Image 1 (cartoon, rainbow, N blue to C red):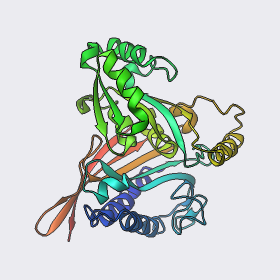
Image 2: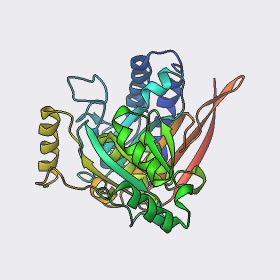
Image 3: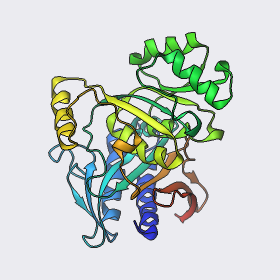
Length: 316
């Protein structure tokens, strides 16, 4: 992918993030999400590329903008698939909490997993522990192996977990193993990526989270050299039907198939772009000044392996 095109997507996430930020703390998640979606779609159509949304804001009948299957871009230039989340962690914005961002993943046609909007059981670790984690291994074993790979004591390991009732058993096992826990209310894309960032203080991500978020995390995990391992965890018979459609497209027969970063985002023609709305473990949020605001973004390219952090000042 052209490096200039990768940077063009920063303008898209910046615009979506700024639009959503106007709704921070106003307890209106739908308005915040709509603002981000509308702005992202408008900016996409100003960029010279031919994109198709393979992971979007729902099916066509459920989402008026940026639905799965929608064509975006000016229609000329490279063809690519997109996984997008105009506003990851909608509730965080609505309630004025931390860790919310606007995100775009791009890849060559057919290289990004067309995951339905359901759940996956996940484990993620950074480069040093990437080869020792196993989704089906006991929690204590994953923690011990990660500690050894990182040269830490088990008591120094911090596991990031989404604060959900479904994780009661997992939380108990982490505590029994002797590790520490950092809870997040939303946004496990940033939680997975944080395991690759030494200064984040996060060593592992564990638990059940969104399948679309797993795909969004796969690209940066690959670029950083980390690993995310997932398995679909359907909530209903309808979920199972959608999963089987996804697997059929991917030529996979086993519903219990274990995905990793490479199988969810194939090849190196990949990019990941995110702009923070509310600060989290990945990037800082938007800062308001007297006559301007400051955005913080990250841009990653698979082909070059580059990770760029971009701070932009916008006139109000």
